Length: 455
Image (tube, rainbow, N blue to C red; front, side, top):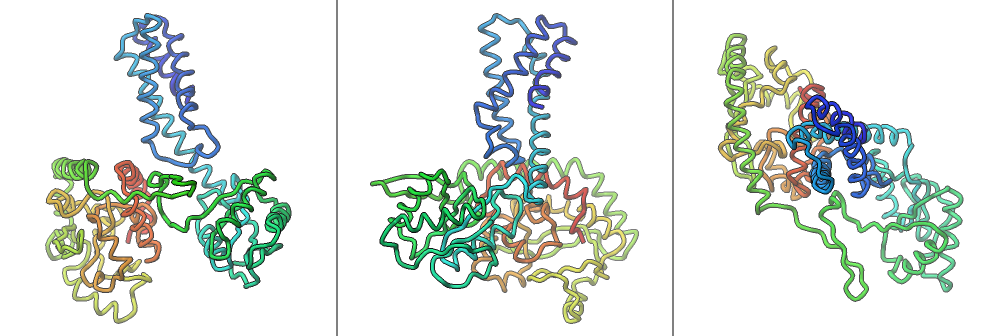
């Protein structure tokens, strides 16, 4: 796809533009584009299909333009740059589409336990249970646990197969640990040993074990115990021979946040301007079909718990707030957390149900974004009464500005449990990036069309 996506459009465009050596130039583009991506490791086994993001594709394309510019100068090519650029613009677009298709194909394959690594977990029973449970809870990764080698005789709760155990104390002969692990690896056909360190797995014991496993051709991976930390935030160092893992703090200030704020306000202003006719039609439909105002105002908690008035199109009857307590008392809440959600809420009007299905009720929040109270992307702003019940972990979701869309909206919305919602919000808060925001906004279009969890 990369070769065809660069070569075919270039050949068609250059020939249509009457450029000299059109086919040779297109062939150079068709060879150079896969070569650039190969050199940058995009076809490596650990990279192909592992991400659907498009920012890397754009970076590769800029490198391609530089390579072709050098070749053009070296060979004295006289192709018109604007025509050549028009022919090459299809390459990153088609590659991005193919990248997404490969990603979804890989995820689908892994749901059927294909394209995975067979993992043997080593650790104390509590740590091993945690690792197995965490890996089993999601299917988009490459690790499938085929067995566990516990340290000690305590019982495992995860149900994973156990064929060998390591002693609580470090063995007199270091080779004893490796012999047991290698037997288990052969028994389960494991191709990776994943170690969950603990007090009974000392650094020296792990060192001897890793030597023996590596000598036997079996790779070893070590779990640091951190959860939901993206690779880009991790750095390695080795002072005095000690392996040190550096975790970069989440981005809260600086140029990137300034760019985010500028994009938020610019996008909100353009959205309000372009969507003005839609606002008029929606407001008129609400007023004509149910008594009450077209807009609904509600106090929400923003960044650092600061209250603000959030705007939405009214999708419920005018006295919906007063009827909420009655529904809660009747046990109508279908959400397991602090939010109130019902699939068939009797307070929602006919027009309101359509607005929610298409997410049009959220559009007035562009006013909040323009005023700096919200962002285009971020966690959903909670109600003050919900925040009153937050613990220290849940309060962390208020470390950034709330957003109109976010990981919650593109991952199932109201169909998600409270724990899943909180996990998504914390992942966003701790690993925010501009590229991540762009990806969420791209996925939002699909989520709106799909409508899953919108009620």
